[in-house]
Length: 137
Image 1 (cartoon, rainbow, N blue to C red):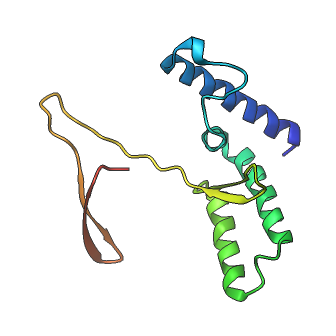
Image 2 (tube, helix red, strand yellow):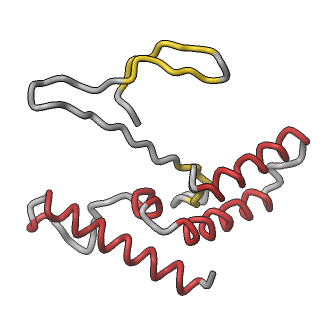
């Protein structure tokens, strides 16, 4: 994956997000000095392959800072790499040169025309049930 491809996909995601946001905001409030969207939102809208490239660069920075000295930390690094590869999370470097991990979470509220709401009332994992009322997502 080339840097040019990553930049191109970032630009596409930025333009799309700005266009969508500008439909919600008053056009007079938009300017080239302030973006109406956050960097994390732009990255999470990019194709997975380009997100992986960006996240790997952030992981390299962490690696140079020697955050992975212990066996437990090396296992955490491998778990993090798996999350990145599957698109479960993204990593980026913020304006203060700190590496950040970002998760995109989606929740749905489905309501019928009569006011009934679809809700999740629990979960069953590994044969164990737990009550938790929430919207699906």
